[in-house]
Every structure is written in structure tokens, then in C-alpha cells.
Amino acid sequence: MFGAQQQATEPMGNRLSKIVTRTGDTGTSGLADGSRLPKHHPRFAAMGDIDELNSQVGVLLAAGVPHDLARVLEPIQHALFNLGGQLAMPEMELLTADHVATLDKATETLNADLPPLKEFVLPRGRPATAQAHVARAVCRRAERSLWALIDSDDSVPTLLAQYLNRLSDLLFICARHLARGDNPSEATWEA
Image (tube, rainbow, N blue to C red; front, side, top):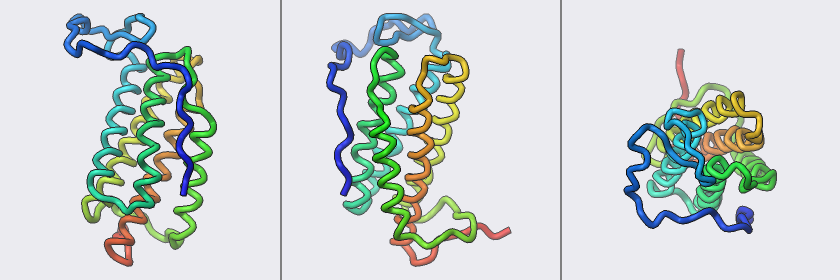
């Protein structure tokens, strides 16, 4: 249904051979270039939120989604690793406009099967449906964290935040697809 995400052609920095380094015991953490920043730096906040988002997408996949949605979500985990990697290695371009275009294509294809929304959808349903909503909410937080970093560091490409903006839309559409599989009518907000 959708092509594989573009993979980085350059090797990704050194792999960790030792997990417990104790180098972060003073409240700093290292980037791939060897520089160190405070752990509370906006770059690490964004990287942490993106890591959490990737984990939430993994939980969504583990919750059991139809094959067509799994084929859309699996490459997203790789793209999120690319996004986090680009924040850790600012000199590398690991996430590209092709990644955003892939999300746009998936969104258009999946949204074509859904009826128009007339009410706000409640974030609930069976485990996979509810998990898609959790992933969407975490994606929105990761996007806010990334914009905070962009506002403080103009070397961070806005394309990275655009990817998360598109991804949150796609995750919402995935939740709607899963909800319709649970029940022909989605649970909607009643004022």
C-alpha cells in the first residue's frame, strides 16, 4: 500500500556498547558529536517526547491493528528514530520531505473511507482504538516540545515539526478506522 520510508545512507554514530556510563550523573547528557547539554535542555525534552511517541506507536502495534494499518505504522517507527537521531546529530539530515509526503499520502488514502465528522470524537474504544488516541496526544506534546526547541535554535529544521503535525492527524484517522471496526458509530462528545 505505501512504500518503505527512505533510509539514511550514512552510518548512525557510534553504537552503545556500554549502557551504564555514569556520565549523566551530573545532570548533563551527550549528543552524538560529543557535546554535552543539561538534561533539561529543550533538545532533550523533544528527544524524550519523540522516544515516548515511538514507544506509544509500538504499543499501538502490539495492541493488534489490521494489516493495512500496521503497514502504515511500522515505517513510522523508523522515521521517528530518524527524527530523534537528527536531533542527536544535528549535522545529519535523516528525516526528509519524502517522509512527510508519505504521511500525507497515507492520510489521504485512509481518510477517504471515513464519513465526515459532525461531532468531536471521544478518545476511547477497544484497546487499539484508545491507544491510537494516546499516541495522537503524545504526538501533539512532542510537536509542542519540538517547536519550543525550534524557537530557541533556528538551526533545527521546521520540517521535523511538520512531520509530527502530519503524524498526529494520521494517528487520529487511524483511531477513527479502528473505532469503526469496533462499532459502526464512533463515540462522540455530548455537551
